Length: 368
Image 1 (cartoon, helix red, strand yellow):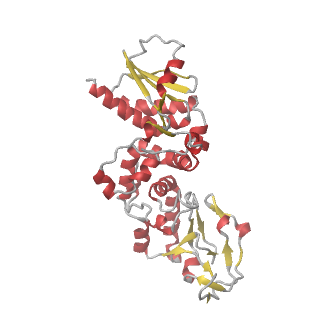
Image 2: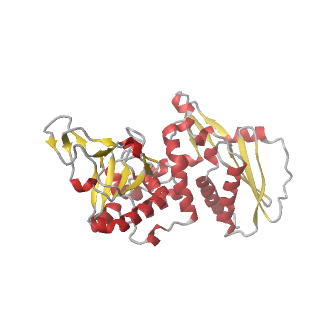
């Protein structure tokens, strides 16, 4: 079970759990895959299967070693110990770490190095163009530089290729940018420093182990895997850090988000039940519901006086120390009704996938 940074927990009122905070982890799996706890923290469910697949892919460090490209962090200035001179760095153009953002370099911030003593200067080739530069934060800002020598500090990782392999390095850069959402999701699941200390920082090791298939086809993810990667990047990391102040718990679901939930649910179950259709949906007092029916329309009589009763069932106190939020699925006649709190957290794509999986299990258990 995963306890979140909700208002009740922060104010020491009670621990809070909901349906999507409960995960089953076999002991043997946990012994061999310690990252499963972080995957569950970010949503669990099918995300664990996706993480296992990404973990089996070849790693970026291995790819770069085969290419024999110069790869590593930038210089570290001398603070104490035995500082070393590096005349090939002093006076050269210098890229401040803050100048690499949003996959571009702000050239107006480039200055010159005035320091003469360094703790780790690295090798000159690490700063020679052509260069791919990756900033060590979870968003993985990346830029291509091909205008001569450019020094940078250790919060940036550089990749340099021989001039005759410039096109290959440029192709690598384009691929990195194109797959950035997958790489960012991987960092969130497998990162060693994210969510600890400086919340958005990562280590060079986190970049070393990024997935990097040998063939372009190795990047192929199916549609729901793409959705989960996007969700980790867009919502889940902030949800872990900010809890009650994140968009997932702050924002109310709207018609567009309900529509996305509905489409995913139907796409998954529609492959088994071809006559499943969308039905009523709406927002009640703090709740939202989405109905589906088998056939052209629901045979239920829809009233407008059931909100109070649903409130009693969805939110349940278990003593003074624990508050649980239930997720309801009603199966009545030819209709399925999903009822949950109206916070965005309960209507994101991963919950649609999990709800569809569990609904399929329920229906098959009833003989349908």
